[in-house]
Length: 334
Ligand code: COA
Image 1: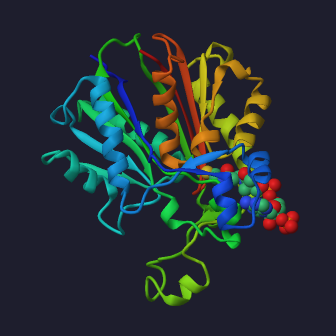
Image 2: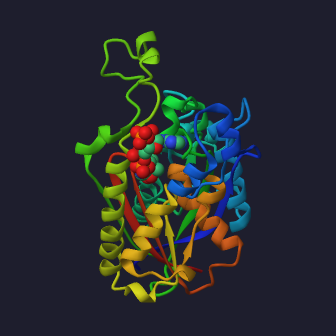
């Protein structure tokens, strides 16, 4: 009997601390107008001192388990995507594992940046469909705020990013024509890795972390914004259509489109290019900023809780990010 994987629970967790554009004006030379005009962002959430990535992942996991009416003992494997690991090693998933008391089930961190959740979803799907694991917890989790240059020198990057975690539970179902994941496609292009990256600390250097790296600000993310923008608005429509085509779904059959929340202008551009009506889009970047790997599971959870998703509807998720990486998924909700 062939299995299909299906999302049976979603959850999210963002810090309580709201950081508005006006708060950023106190830290650097920027304006609310510049930020809103270029990115659509009004505010984001940043962690309080001492709040860790695994705390956010824990909150999202608990919410997803509750939503699915499951216990942690019902989960067989944890895949956590992040670009802002709690420590150099081991991965954030291990600190989550400890917090949720996950026994000895396997966990692993995936590093595919803003497309990380879709990479995780594809791998979880393969694990479930092959029968290797019955239920996989898939997370995106980021604490960007502790790694940003919050001075004017880092303003092009630091105004964009927010902290948060999102989680889904993926489970096998034998109803081949029922709700579930229809297709996930992901891609990478390493030749653009340095267009959006944080160079240090680096194991490629004779010493991983030096005072010089800190003084040169190589410990902060660098982004070639226009280059990233151009690639995002090309790759996102491309992979979205590739995925729909592979699943034999027509663009106008899709009920809801969830795009990675990197920049509202990117999403408007993509929607316009594909002639997607505004009524089929949801965005939360205005409130949460760019939470990288956490953005899509958070958006999915919000859409589900706000009643934007009805059983049987077709939902498309698409992302682009550092690496470069990009991907898309199509699923039938329910
Ligand atoms: N506040 C005020 N001014 C700022 C600023 C800020 N936060 N950040 C940059 N500027 C200034 C620049 O210094 C520059 O000034 P200059 O013209 O005097 O040199 C000017 O604004 C324009 O900068 P530029 O970088 O060319 O802006 P842009 O129109 O390309 O917009 C981004 C910048 C980052 C919003 C845009 O490039 C973008 O969204 N790129 C994609 C980002 C993305 O998606 N990243 C994540 C992918 S996962």
